[in-house]
Image (cartoon, rainbow, N blue to C red; front, side):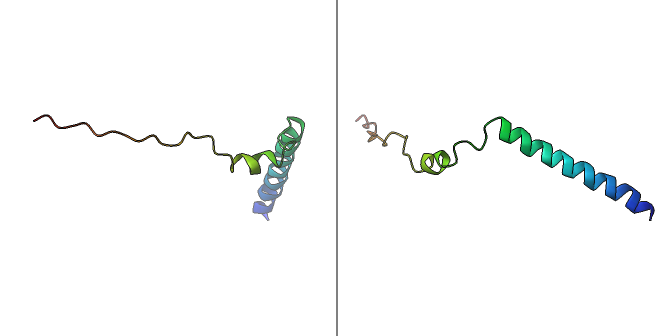
Length: 59
């Protein structure tokens, strides 16, 4: 029974902490552009590799 007196407040605290983090994320705009990340991963912003010339050996 003593363990329940520690576990119940700890669970309530962690639940409130998670709720506060979720509300902070909502207010800071974390969920405004849901499709942008999906398209951003498909976007190819890297330049194509250029052909590297191997140094010629000196005779």
